[in-house]
Image: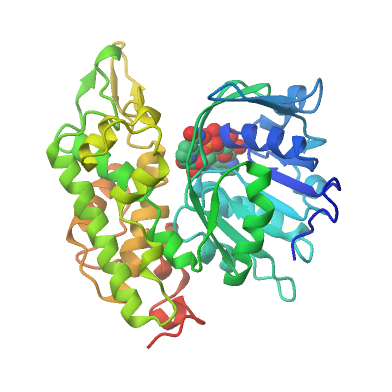
Length: 407
Ligand code: NAD
């Protein structure tokens, strides 16, 4: 059970983990809803910097597109989990996926019975990592994840203000135990003001993670064969908009392979619903119904999506005032080991070939200096750094879904 307010005005206790864009949106939303909000921010000097603004003078302002503003403050911010985790009924991980592991390990000793932990977004394999990290005997937290972050948001003044550029029209949520997803949605939906929808399986949430297709797929489509190209500032290509036909075809092929994996799982697991894994094009139209001006094709939907306007390839400066593509950026460093590699691992368990996913992983792992795919199998030396089932010793679907009715 979540420690929820017992009356409409009672106060629940929540801790937001992270000090970035998403955390800046969550703190005012939750404080405004009457929750007592604390922040766990162990990264660099964030706790100190946040304390200066987020705990005083009304706290942080979230400015939403359309004119709505929400202000609210945290009551305590610390880099020490012992100060902000005990007593929390709800813990929200507003973090990139590579920070989930260290954060779960840091908070584990202080979790109390009945706690619910939610990752926004979960990315892929979050349930496997949580299960492995939170082996805590009698204590069994509810673990939930969102298919994506509900907002496109950017901090404009650290600790003080964040701009919410857009809110997705629908975001799916899965939980372990599976039947708690609806209850977590009941708590979070009014709190976040987002149309959250419960789905039955974390495995489906992992396959439905569209970031793992879009981000590495576009990086591959835009950058393969041009890895060393330099750009003047004004030449840095747009990321999502202006996609060429090769890249759009690649994104469609990646999505088709995920659908094939979902279909195979539905044949092998009695409780798996492939309808919970939305194809990329359908997801894009459902997530951005207002922002997309031309929904006629996947290519047009990307190119006319106002929520993607102006976002460019991730770059880093080099000596002469020019820029090169930053292959360490999250589009690969988060979405490959905590995304595409996880799907590849599940495909291997379901015995589904994934030639397009393999091509993208092969290229991306070279950019990242890692080796996940070795030859034709997911047995490279860096698999343990990913969230593929194989990293947790899972070798078949029965182990992957102990209660999933493997046939
Ligand atoms: P952010 O970069 O603003 O903040 C991330 C925070 O995570 C940091 O401030 C820090 O507190 C923590 N962190 C980062 N690296 C860490 C590390 N190595 N160890 C411990 N903590 C670390 O990120 P964000 O924009 O808030 O995004 C959070 C998640 O949401 C990411 O997965 C991102 O890909 C996803 N997302 C963001 C947006 C957006 O518009 N901001 C949109 C879609 C998805």
